[in-house]
Structures are given as structure tokens and as C-alpha cells.
Length: 488
Image (cartoon, rainbow, N blue to C red; front, side):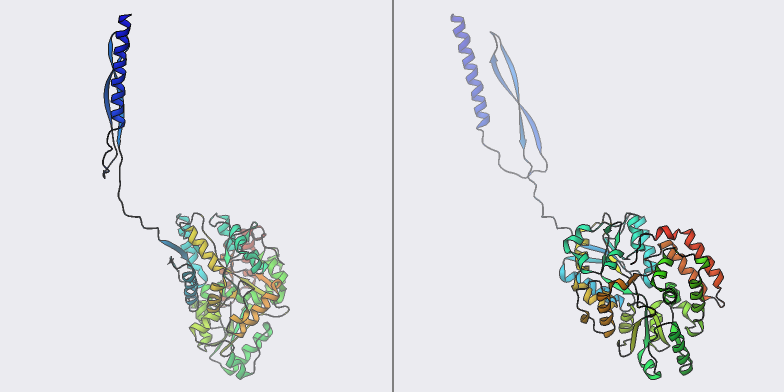
């Protein structure tokens, strides 16, 4: 019994000792805050005695002591907001329009820095080469200029662009633009880019003062055009009747388009570029080529070395009387030649027989897959879709407004006021042109070469050109590649 009392006493003393040590550890004064370079962790061994039986043994208790790291750093600077953009607007009227676009973006989002990669070259030919090299290398810009239709489809099929269904729904953009324009940027049921304009391809520009002096009316069709050329040649033998910039080669196709449209009508035009016409046995295409070749004596002798804007400049400098070009030529006339529309030059859709059809294509922008500045790209598209961008940009560059809710009188000239009004009231008269929009891209490139070679020849070979075109339709499987487009 005495032994047991002694044992319990020893155990009680040992327990008190252990509790004392633990209380000391728990009530120790906290360490002073300090700045250290790293976290230091160390283990402290505390020996306590406990009684198991009569014998006393040691138990090691490990405590972990952590000294907290305190790091003092400067507040990191936020990532700069940038937008890298590829565009081809570098000609007179176009450069000013690009500046107007970026000014509109700056007004809405002043903290976004625009990083431009403008590539000179008529209609973006060189631009596309550089852009595709960047895309292939895996370093695409955030956004880039592209036409609607087949050109856009190429990028979509290559998984280059993001679908914009949510964006369109958020701003209700589909309700603000003509249905044919929406169709031009919709691939497989999804919109992939935002149009900021509609360019009408088939416009004939003419020296207004010369026409007034000679008592000439604006041509409505091919026979009128030839008659005007005869009158101009007689009155001004040193002046070319029709300025063409064949260096771009697509300019030649623009002229041929007007002849095909007049001879075949809109249904034929669409069927031809969708590969649904038997080209080898087609009398309309054959006659179109013959009439195209008959224009040679009336065009500028240096056409092979001129770009589209230089051809416009030839009219502005009174070396030529007329040119066939898209709406963007208005900007080239006003900015490049200082000509006033309706005073120095006139412009009409051409031809207007047998029907007034508007061949069009839009300039558009989307967002690339994996764009490093996606938020800024969506901000950009919001501005592209706004009247605040479209009014100053389209007025300057020459395009029509993509939005039909913008007042046509925002245009300063009667030419576009009338055309915008006509577009708004007759959207069913809009047909995508072949300029990168109906013909698949690869076929488009080859077709331009075929037609330019024909027009540059001293003796244009109609039969050889028919065969080359028929072969092109087969080799590039145009019927399948253009099946996506439907008109009306």
C-alpha cells in the first residue's frame, strides 16, 4: 500500500512537471515581426519524464517552430492593353479611313494601344501572304481584315477564327444589317466576323465636267459605254476612255463581271461562279470575253503596270475619262485627286440593264483563336459594329454603311446617299461578287490570272481562255467549294 502511494506521488509530480513545461511553451512571448528572405522551419526536442512502471524512461516530444516569411515588394504594373491588327488600307482614302477607325477605338477605349501591321498592296494581295505566314507560324495577330464569303470561310475551315454568336446576340447586330450581308459573314450557321461596311463592286466613275461638255449621259450598259468611248476618242484623242489597273489583275475581272451580268443576268452570274455552268459550251461566257476584248482600243496603254488606285488617279488627272471600280474609289477621288463628287466626277451602278443589281463584298474583322488580347479584340469588334466607327470610316474610305439604321444623309455626297437608300430598301438586290466571296480562294487566284492574261494579250484567245476557265472549275472543284452560297 505504501509502495502504491509512493508510485502515485511520483506520477503526480511527473504530470505536474509535464504540464508546467507545456504551459511555458504555450505562454512564451511571441517573436518580434521581421522581414526574412525565406521560411525557416526547425524542430525543437523537449525531454520530459513520465513514469510507466517503477522505472523512469525518457520520451522525446518534437515541436515544430515556424518563422513566417514577410516579403515586401512593389505593386506590379497591370498588363498593357494592346490590339495587334493586320489591315491593307494604305492607299489614298484608305489610310485616312484606317486612322478614323482607330480614332473611334481610342475615343471608346483610350487605354488600348493599337499595334498596326499595315501591308501595302492593292486589295490586300500582299497582306494575305504575310498574314497567312504569321498564322502558319502560330503567331497570328489578335484581329485582321478579311472579306466576307469564301475568303472568310477559308479561315473558318482552318480553325483560325472564333465564332461570335454571343457577341452578335449581345449587341443584336443581325437585326441592324441586311440579311445578305449577315449571310456573307455566317459560316455553318455561326457568324465569324463583324462587317463595318458594304463595298459595291460594279460602279462606273466618270469625269462629270467632260461628260457635261460633250453632252454624254452615264452609260447604263455595254452599248452605251462603247458609244461614249467613240465620242470621247473623237473629242479627246489623247485621252483613254476607260482606265484599268491590271497590275492588281482583279481589276480586269471587275470589268468582265459587268459584261457577264448584263448578258446573263443575276441568276446566271451566281450559277457561273458556283460552278453550275458548263463553261466549255456556254455562249454567254464566250460572248462576254469577245466584248471584253473589244474594249482594248479604248483603255490606257499602261494598264498592265497600274494598280487600281493609279487607274482612279488617271481619271482624276484627266488622262482617262472613266473607270470601273468599287465604292472605295470615292475616297481615292476625294483624297487623292481632290475631286468633289457630283461636281468633278459622277458615279452610277453599272450596268443597270436588264436589272439594277449590286455586286458587293464587305470588309470585316473577327478574333483569332487564342488571340493574346481577346478582351481587347472584343472591345474592338464592339466599336467596329458601332455608328461611331462606321460613319467616319465609311464616309472617308468610300464604302456603304453596314448598318441600315444609319441615316444616308451622313454621307456628304449625293452618290452614296442614293445608293445607301437603295440598299436599305432593296436588300434582295445584293449579290456577293466573285472578289474572294463566291469563288473559293484557290480558284479565285487562278481565275484572275486567266482573265488578266487574256486581256493583256495583243490577240486575246477566246477559245483558249474558255478551256482554261473550264479546267479551273474542275481542278478546284468549284461546284462543291461554292455550294455554301445561296441566292436569293
